[in-house]
Length: 274
Picture 1 (cartoon, helix red, strand yellow):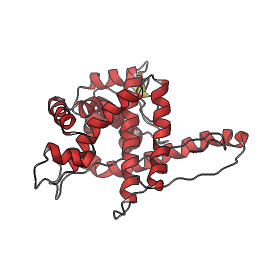
Picture 2 (spheres, rainbow, N blue to C red):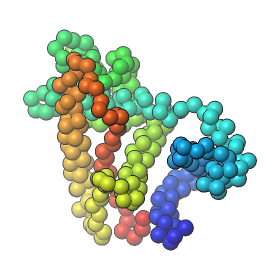
Picture 3 (cartoon, helix red, strand yellow):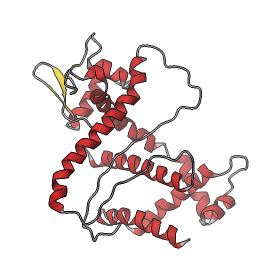
């Protein structure tokens, strides 16, 4: 391992390890999980033209063959929990993003309009679900949004959006959001490190030795900038899908893709090195 790679890994692992220690997760548990992830990724990266034998995976990962065999059996019997666990969270987030971004669900001032649950004017919650491509009963999504404190029912029986972004209400769901966001951020950065073209957008602004009092006044300003940026981006993504809501989707010329666009802010003491 080169010194540069070692330094990169230390910086990436430090905040993760600190969190694991605080949560009582020791080295042995992390080691066992790392072994499983090594095998999963080795299988994913392996050349499909040749079979991935236990010996091949052992050479790729440095894990002995007996462990490789055991881990492969665990992977085969393990259900796809990650994708299913994110489904409800993703749907709720997509509904909120569409509500705050799509023109038909905003009033003259640009604010998300109150929505009746059902209606015929294309400006109700049922229509919102269709535009957001969420094929779940309205009451199910409303219940999740109410649980997260994102919506409430007004006195006129119309739903009010309380926040322009969806944040899960329970720690387990927050972990899912964190892993998806940080995971894709890391994939973008590592793809750029490999020199893939075109490069993904992966930039950050940083300043050292700033006044804490000065930053105090800027935090809310940065948050508003980030919210507006993501709203504009989502509106651009929605334009085509909203226009074609009532017609069948066009045939895809290539495999469908997914994307994630993020913004983050962090501050700490100037002497607290990354």
